[in-house]
Image 1 (cartoon, rainbow, N blue to C red):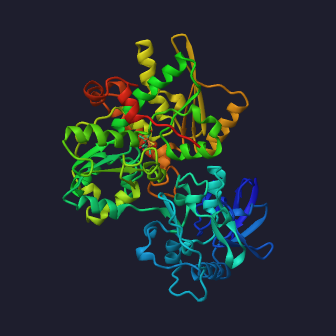
Image 2: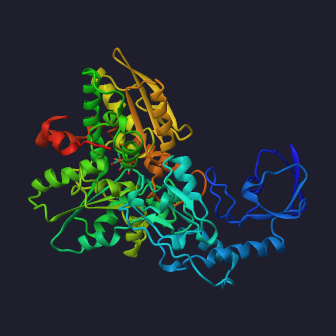
Image 3: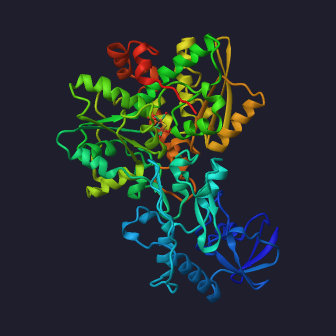
Length: 564
Ligand code: HC0
C-alpha cells in the first residue's frame, strides 16, 4: 500500500490506480468530460484537473497514476478557475443551442456548465465551420457540437474495431469524423451507434424519424402498425427517470395505442418465428454437410461488419432475415391480406434499441418491408410530446395475430439469448426431451465477451459460441481462421447485446446493463410459455399461411441473401 493526501486528508491505498479512480473510490466528486470509464482516458478536455502539490502542476486526474506520498488538491482556487477557463474555451467553439439540442437532458457539457455556474463565455470568436453530415440513414454528425474529446474514436476503434472515426487536422482545425474527411454513408461505418451513446454532447446522434411517424399517424388514409423489440421494454422507463431494469411493457403498449397505431405488435413474435426458421436451417446444414458454423443474422451492425471486414465468411450467415424484417415482410403479406388492406395504405413502424435497424430497413434487399424505425429514445420523446408520463398509463396487451411471444423470444434482447432460445427448441425437437434445466447458463452474462459451450444432442456434440461487441466478434472470427471449429455462433453488434444498443437511453453509471439484463430474464421466467415452438400464433401462421418452417413461401418472405 501507499500513502496519499487529498485536500490535506491522509489515505492508505493501492498504487495501481489513477488519481480519478482513487477519488471516485473515496467518493470525492470532481467534474470529468472526455473521460469514459473503461473506454477513454485521453485527458484532452482538462476539466478533471487537480493540483499535484509535489510538482506544483495541474494534472488531469483521469490519466495520472497515483504515487506514494502524493498530495492532491481537488478544489483550490487555481484548480477551480482553470477548470472554468478550460470549459469556457470548449464552449467558445460550441454551438450553444441547448433547449433545442437532441442531447439536451443527456448532455454532459450542459450539465457541467450548469454545475460550474458559467453565465457568459469570456472567449468570443471564430467557431469551426465544418459541415453537418446527414448522409447516413442511421446517424448524423454535427461538428459544431463536437468538443474533440475522442470518446467516439475510442469506442469505434477499441470496442468495435471498426476504425472509421479519426481526428484529422491540428489545433483549431481538428475535425473528428470518418477518415479522409469522408461522410458516414461513404465510410465503413456499421451504424451501431455506440459512438452516439458515448458522445458527451450532441455531436453524433441518431437520425430521427419522429416527424415521419407522426405524419403517418395523422394521415387518415394510412393504416399504421408498430412492432417493439425485446430490449426496448426494459429500458424505456429510464427516459422517464425510473430505475434501470424497470420493465414497462404494458404501459408502452398503451402509449402506442394512444398515439394512434392501428395495431400494436411484438417483434418477439417474429423472434420465435426466427428460431423455427433458423433452427431448420441449422439442422439442414448439419445433415447435408452445409457450411458450418452457422452464424446468426439478426443484428444489422454485425451484418455490416462481416460484409465489410470478413466477406469470406458470408456463406456462414443464416439466410434468415432479422425478426424486425420478418415482421415487416409478414405485415406486407399476411397482415395485409387478413385485413383486406392495400399496400399503399399500410405503414409499418419499428421501435428498436438500435440505430443500425434504421439502415437495415433501408437495405436494397428488404426495402419497403419496414417504413420507419424509431429508437427507444425517440419513442420516449414522442410519449413526452403527448404530455404523458409513461407510468401514469395502465398496462395493456399486444394485439392478437402477431403479438404473442414466449420467454425464448424475450431473451433475444440480451447477449446469449438467441443461442439459448435456439437450444431450447432444437434440443427438444431433436431429442424429444426438454433442454436440461431449460436455462442455458453457459450463454448468459456480461463478464465474458466470448462464451463457448458444448451441448450433447443425441450423438452430436454441438459446439456453440456467443460473441457480443464487434471486437469480440473479430476475435472469434480470427480464432476460426486459426482452426477453431463450431457448429453455431451467435453474434451481436453491441456489448451486452441489444440491451446495450446505440439507440437505448444514455447512461453513465455502473450496473445499468446488468439491471436491464436481469429484467429480461425476469420477463422470460414469468412467461407461461418459454420455448419458441410453443408460440400459438406462430403455429397458426404456419398452419394457415406459411406451411412449414423452411417452406417455399417462408423462404420467399423470411429469408434473404447478403453480399459484400
Ligand atoms: Fe434486437 Fe432482434 S433482439 S436484433 O437485439 O434477433 O435491435 O431488442 O429487435 O430484429 O427480436 C435489436 C433487440 C431486436 C431483431 C429481435 C433479433
